[in-house]
Length: 218
Image 1 (tube, rainbow, N blue to C red):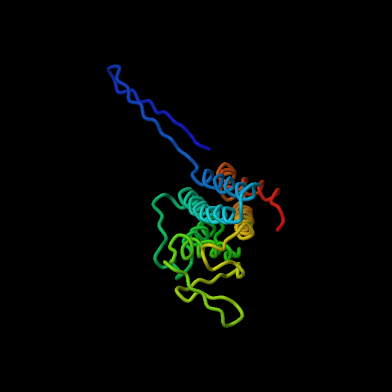
Image 2 (tube, rainbow, N blue to C red):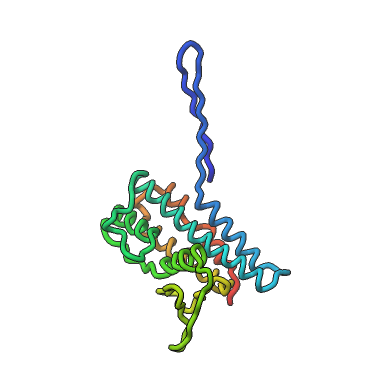
């Protein structure tokens, strides 16, 4: 929810200083956009090529949603000046995961036990397939499955997902959205009572929960 605040300060001799502040929960707008494009992808009157285009946009927006949400939690729990310590920058681990772990560790005084493989895969797709694509993706099959030979792309959970940009479809998109909904719901269950209810209510993935109630089966 966006917030508008107006601060008025009297400075004497009838002078007055007025400052306006606007605040928006960016992650809310991003997830709303992701669901909007997912609905577009499932609509009537579009061909498979268009569905795949919408699907790729949704996956990309989902990664941005997680980043924005992780930043919101870090600001609220760890402080706006908190940075990921160099010693915690594990090779290959998405920074979002490190942030979620840090928030949980601070509040619960123990390591996060939730599986983050699916979340890691979302950022593998974002960083290695969509956001920083090769000029030409190259695949080789020789062990019963396809592998990229131009760059390393592998998944921890979504092992049947595409390795190339053009092949992502609605099935992949729905699996990503459901994974994020399940992970965040479980995370906020663990944080219940550790932070203000207002913060929990703001960050809960209500939009994804509502959408998954209506998602068609593939």
